[in-house]
Amino acid sequence: MSKLYIVPTPIGNLKDMTFRAVEVLKNVDLILAEDTRTSGKLLKYFEIGTHMQSHHMHNEHKMVEGLIQKLKSGLSIALISDAGTPAISDPGFLLTRACVENDIEVECLPGATAFVPALVNSGLPNDKFVFEGFLPVKKGRQTRLLLLAEEPRTIIFYESPHKLLKTLANFCEYFGEDRPVSVSRELTKLYEETIRGTAKEVLDYYTNKPPKGEIVIVVGGKK
Image (cartoon, rainbow, N blue to C red; front, side, top):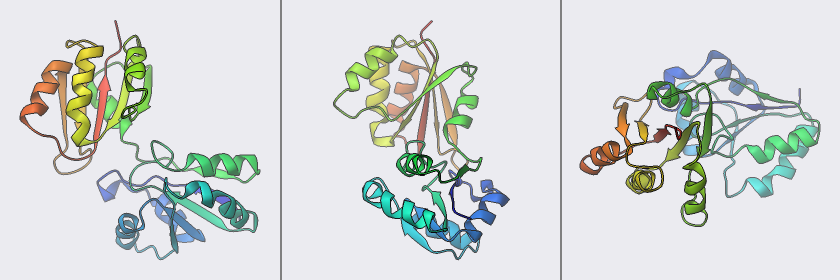
């Protein structure tokens, strides 16, 4: 049956893949993968032989119309990203929106998303929170930080290791050195760690220990 499946994949530990996710990937007609090399390892591990096609931020705009036609013709398609749930700071929104606009069924499976364990691990209030994803690199960064400095809810960011020190320094400048911060990296992997403290304490820690791996930052809201 024509349907787009949004299928989360493990953020590190392959054992976090669900039975249902494996079943869907084995039975759809086509898998759209952010990076076919990365996803190829996952499919091989679970003995999934479904045909795979590249679908990433640089080609998703021009692919949407063709994919909609394939779905209308009766094909079932699964969308996966390199890790976690597609469309959460990853490709997926454009195709999902197009399916909704064309009355094509969309089903998102539950599964791994990096910010949820990072939020729970932080020890910061999680009854209300704001997910920001990646901060703007240049244009709009200062404006965004000034706005978020007044945010009373817990704030969640994704960050790359080579930009972490800059971002923590920005937090000290715009949010204050005493703002509570929790940095989780390499979640579900061998060297997983969560460092908690004030923005200044966490900045000092990573200044002396350059970070590696995927990073989620959780920041306490303004009191």
